[in-house]
Length: 320
Length: 258
Image (tube, rainbow over all chains, first blue to last red; front, side):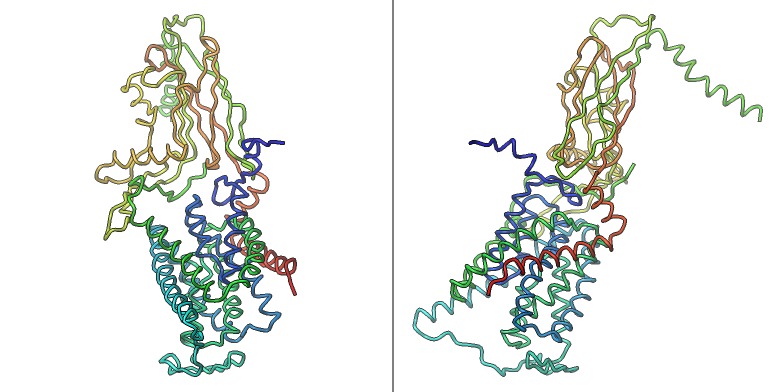
């Protein structure tokens, strides 16, 4: 039996109440699932992929970024529950990170609003994406490339030596984090949390791709609690950002978020299974290439000659 | 007090007097109605089409029109303050320049007619009445340099979004005096009041105009979500977060392995 695709179109189209446009429902579910698959496979939130994808597919950047924070809550809850069952969350460390994150997120939402009123929000979002994706992707590419090269040569992949100290460990106001077996200053912890909060609000990402390396390399948090604690912080910071964006900019589209969440949570399960079949450095190399590809696409959008030299934005709507 | 009353009487009588003077040559009137007074935007909204019916009424004294009538229908969506920015290349990156604001510009503007507008009447009449994309009342705020470029850019972007358009085939003259028109509303229309102006032309001159309107409103689930987001943003934000927690929790139960 043949089904006319056009006859199905009205059923597949769904009108988003806040974005105020009709989009293909299965495209959104599929996008959520595809990104969820990758995020499950690589153990990352996937916000850095989904937000640009939404913007490329015509969702206004302000709606994409604000809505994305809601979708990250869902995917992080799924992940964090699994870590909670395994007792691999350092709640004390998590709470300090959340405290910093809330401050950062509040500043980010205010900044978001100011940039939007100047018409420069899209530019800042794009530039931040290029800088962070380019930087992190580049570092990961080098690191995983070296690891693969070493393995090829038969040398063991060197593990990080514990007990190394940096300037970070000389800062004052030290607190003992029992589960992480750490005695460090809360200043870098809160600062890291605040940076992540800022990124959540402005870029529509969870920030795990910065948080995880920063916790491992700067704070020297043991690897087994890093992911769980990072997810714990991301849940509360993205949840707070969702609420703040709802109040401040009213650009959170709950229906769009729901479609992405459902797709994402399902996709993540299959991604996690696929991820177990690959070695760590192979996964990191693939993720690095993916991160660089997204960064490159955003960069191209910044430098390529635009189709039209003019952009139109709505400053205010008059309800008559 | 008496003088005021006298002025009021004169003012009230003035239109009647004017109509009386113009009467013999301008006796046509037009009546029109749209198929729906309210367009409901629901989750399955993919745009819609309204039908407008109209009739050109004449009285006994009306002179015959050698070339028949032309009908031009304008539909203006709710106003919005639009900002047009030109992109400039700064260090290899395309950056938005300072904006030019068009306060209360129509969010939607359609000009429907029975034949191309330029064949119906001359630019002098159209300009005076503000009919057509070239002349419609979209005013720039302040005195920026080169406002026409920005106005043209606004029209271009709106056209590419399908929100501004001219359709010279949309009005069908059923008889010499009866007409029907189809008003296309795409999925990305704004909610609010839509103004409709129906103009009747003959021999290039505007004979009569009537105004009507309809509303585009979000309805059902869409309305509930939109209203909650704007009227109780805190509740809306909390509800979104609770939904996210539930979906995440459900996902972890449904797919729990081991």
